[in-house]
Length: 318
Image (tube, rainbow, N blue to C red; front, side, top):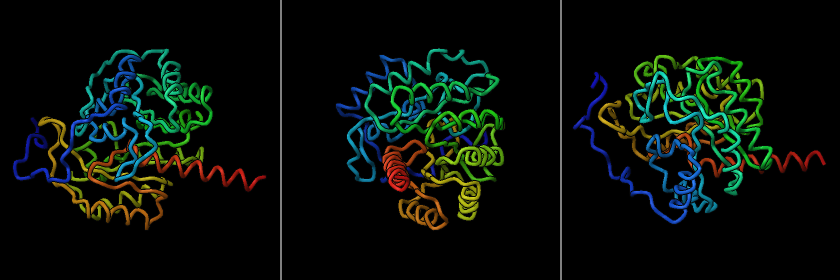
């Protein structure tokens, strides 16, 4: 236990955060498929509250979605080299070496599912010279070779600020480059591992946008003690580096060893942040208590947005 951990008995979880255990036929099928293929998912490792919705192919917020279950695949193993105080993923200074055949095997598995949009993410791998960027690039290229029409989002680490690694992923053929700022500037050192940082993350997002003008995305957790002005500053800073999509969700404490929740933000306040984000120019804002950076409802919208824009562009050139 540290100065920011433990349980805060004065902060009670509200009714709008009650969750049912994941279930459903598609959920069971996808869980079995992932297990047999030995694929890791951030859905399970990070204890995502939306796992049932996403794996069953829901659209979120009352939407029906497309009925196709999808998961956020976690590359480079299930053990992270960093120790962020909000994250439930296992950590180690020396995790097992990554599987060299993982990019090709992952691509084959995803191509067989029939999904139109997939999110690839990973643990931080500070033990690797390139932070795992080539692993990402190989996976994207292998997947696009097997299924050129699929849209691929890569939710990446900061690669220790190595912009060459950022460039390698950005030029791999992906469609959405995502990297999470996580929290406001003041809380960075409390919430994130010391090797991460506000300016470093902003630089990563700015560089990805500048070298390849793709869709870029970031995410903010609320309920950690941030002020409204700090959230506004963070959202504006994300817009200033060209970020197109912002997601905001409630931080939920995974164990007593992790950061305590300072506030449960109301659904009405999340609606305010959605409207504010849209007012300052984000192309899409997903904002709600159970919204996460990899969020099926958001991915469903972004897929439709990208495909529609590409259709219009193709028509205008013909």
